[in-house]
Amino acid sequence: MKTEEKLTDWQKHNLISEYQKQAILEYENKVKKPLFYYSLLFLSVFCICIGLLALIAANWENIPNFIKLSSAYLLLCGVGGGIYFSQDSNKIYIYEGLILAFGLLILATIGLVGQIYHLPSDGLKAILFWSILTFPLIFMSEKALFPSLWMLGFALSILDFCHQMPQLRTILELLFEPHQNLGFCVTLTVLLFIGQFLKLARHKTLLTALQYWIIALFACFALWLDVIGFGWEYNTQTLNSTQWQIYGISLVAFLILWKLGSVKPTSLAFICLSILYGYTLLANLLPRCEDILSAIMTIALLIVTGMTSYQKHQERLFKTISILLALRFFGIYCEVFGSLLTTGLGLITSGIIFLSIAWYGRKLSTHFLQSMKGKTNA
Image 1 (cartoon, rainbow, N blue to C red):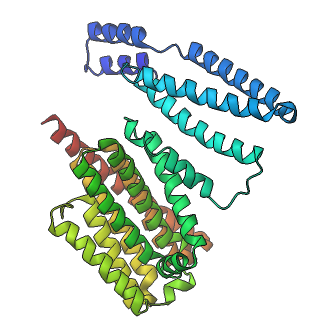
Image 2 (cartoon, rainbow, N blue to C red):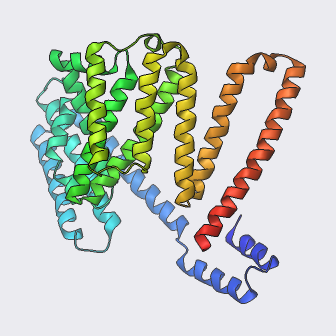
Image 3 (cartoon, rainbow, N blue to C red):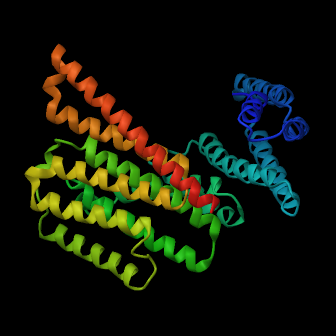
């Protein structure tokens, strides 16, 4: 719905007056961004850049190597100078964009040097080298975009490096093969320790970037354990003595974080990781019930997240969690009563059940949202 239509609807319901409607429209027209102008500007820059790249690619073999390297270093110096001079300005997005461009140019220069001197590629060592070179940039950035990308590159390159070392590869296999949930618990506990260190160092940008990855990993791990990993061979096995020791050490480290007050028992991270530790324990003690336990784990994680979003008045997250919960219960229904979906009478019955759930779920969701808005206004 357009702004003017929305304001007209509000006026009809006596939420705003005619004067307020006109004042809002005038303000929106003043601050409205010229999207057509910015779109043409973006397309122009994009076409010019693609054209330059096409010209360089067509004549790549004819360009001397020293010109290639000189151009790369001059470009790096230019972008570095732009970072220096834009640091004290109020144009934060230009500053952050230059930091991102500088980091990507360093990666491109590494690839250029390797291409010119025919250096063999060995896994992700180039990414690891790039992570070392760009390490200071993550402390210069005031937004979480570049630190998040840096953390991804560093983590993947470290995993690749460990996988190439026989001793370290054995440890990775012990954690993630065939018991992925053990490696997930250890990984998230280590990330919580790193997050506590960043909190003590009061580096908000890096902490925010790390929190994004912790949330993403929680979601991916839960999805893997509940859906992708369902029915795989590792679910029928149990941890050996060494793996139980690793589980115990990791659990003790997690409890130390809680005991020291670094992670509050009521915090979302503590509750979710506690659920994951409990699931890992029960899934190995009761391997035949793993499919039921994984469903309970996912539902528990969604309920805890939904309750947290309700307490923090995060309406969009609450709606998303509600949809995911409905889909998970639908999955349980299909697993238990899947045979009903193969007959006409079963489909009609299922449709009636889904309509009832949808009606009740909408009514319950509306009640929670109204309660949430009431607390916010209060």
